[in-house]
Image 1 (cartoon, rainbow, N blue to C red):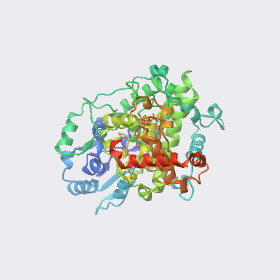
Image 2 (image 1 turned 45 degrees about the vertical axis):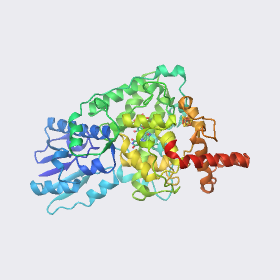
Image 3 (image 1 turned 135 degrees about the vertical axis):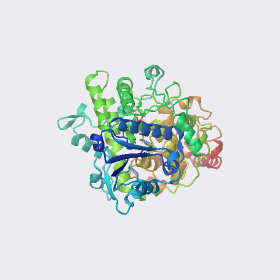
Image 4 (image 1 turned 180 degrees about the vertical axis):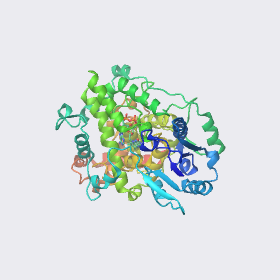
Length: 511
Ligand SMILES: Cc1cc2nc3c(=O)[nH]c(=O)nc-3n(C[C@H](O)[C@H](O)[C@H](O)COP(=O)(O)OP(=O)(O)OC[C@H]3O[C@@H](n4cnc5c(N)ncnc54)[C@H](O)[C@@H]3O)c2cc1C
Ligand code: SF4
């Protein structure tokens, strides 16, 4: 008898395991406390994963497989997977235990240490990513920093994606410069209505309450996330039809002037992909098919989208697996300040931060530029402890799983890896935020101000950050210019800016 474990982020219906049925195989899906508790997760994230697991179990059963679904009620006596599995192997006549390789270092270490007398333990691939696990070490050598752009071009060629023979479609590898438009008033009418879901999760909420599971954020009347591959596919089709035509153009835009400002032209497909209900290749192919069949979708739009999945998503995973476990404790900028309270409440006078945090608490979602240039940028400028920043990002987003969250947070957004993910810190003042959004128009602070109580905190914190790290940052030729601007200012102005930054840091919870 064979016991096969399926984790909550391994709901891949196309996995070879499920292509035929076997009377001696039992599939196990289990809600376990170690997984609800390793950080405080958003309530929508827990509900979306549990409901997706249940529906996957139903699907498996319907397809003729033997399935055991254990809820928190059934697993209450077991703190983690090793304890639960040991118990099942002792009480039932299984002589082999199989698992799919977890996409998280913590769990992979746990599973590889499993030993049960008389039971064969076998690890299997998840058949989800485009770079095979065995090729990661060769593709992402630790002795040199591969840049995303180099990796991405290689992937385009290798998988023959958006290629005209040996040349990139449209004559360019990257249309990033066409991806930075601000939303003008006339553009707001183009923002599509997102695909909505309305899944009843009252029973899961009761279960979480019964077991005193600590969560963050809120949930409305029902769950607005896809919980089956069919729903995820609906979301993909809807995205290609309604948002892809302007995805690239407004990829970096932010606004607070629209009901759908929280999503804009983004796909919100990360959750479905990260729990493997959707294969990244299927998503890429759907976008390219839409581009090829619709004249209103330009190469700038589709390339911008493909780059995120074929490039960034696979690149980030490569960095994670080749740099763990050291990566999780890197702190190149020696940042150590606790997270201000407003990260948990959204209660701050900084409009950009209020918008990004409030929508994260309300929807378990923020789009990339909000994560990177608002909440992440503030955290880096203020020198917030990367462990605390990581825990926040890992908990609050429905799509947050460590392999993708950690290098994005600690690397791309906090520069705590000293330049492994990106070649320079994404540090920005109000100037950038004002250029990419309309947040500053309805903010209590003055975007142009650097000193005095009304001045935008991002401005003085930006300079304080640049001066604090002058020695290491100035060597980067892409940043040198910034210091020449600083040195040109008179001593008194520089002093006032640094005084304002010191005040902001000392009164961070009042900002
Ligand atoms: C600080 C920080 C933390 C992040 N944490 C996560 C996380 O926990 N989980 C997660 O999936 N993404 C994370 N990202 C990357 C990115 O922000 C999200 O993938 C994206 O916002 C998800 O929304 P979407 O599906 O609407 O994306 P879209 O804008 O529609 O992009 C399409 C897809 O591209 C992929 N993608 C885009 N950017 C990245 C990236 N940098 N890394 C990996 N994949 C990318 C995602 O699969 C996404 O679904 C993080 C980024 C930052 C800056
Ligand atoms: S003025 Fe500063 S704090 Fe206010 S929205 Fe603009 S960047 Fe954010």
